[in-house]
Image 1 (cartoon, rainbow, N blue to C red):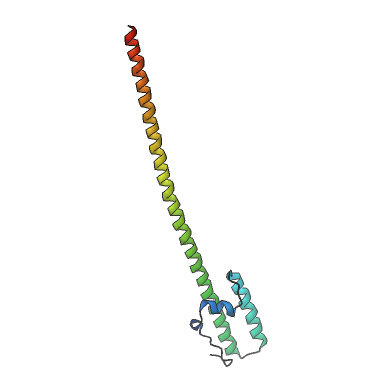
Image 2 (image 1 turned 135 degrees about the vertical axis):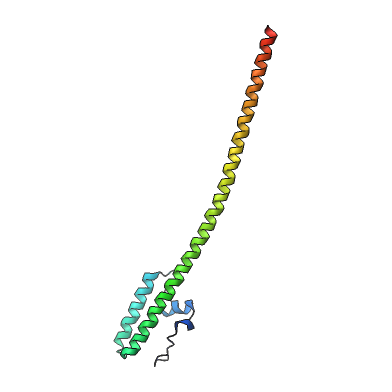
Length: 131
């Protein structure tokens, strides 16, 4: 805790509180985090705090950057996992459809062969009748 009565323990804050603290939009990215932290650090330097206190604040904000960067990575991993699940589901549907179409083609071919055999038999029968 600094002499400003500001808790510098990052684990005492939720992600939402850290986002509010840095004044980030809901759709923030790592560049937004770095930019906003840089602005805050510039303001801290203008306060002319002691060297140790500046170091504590800077470390706190560096930790926030890492914490939020990890959260962004976790969010991205979750999005990717959902996309992979969707792709796998679509892949299974396509495999079933391909099998269905293959079976349909095989049946069609068998039916054509049967018709061809039937015609050949009819031709054969008609030839025998002519003889």
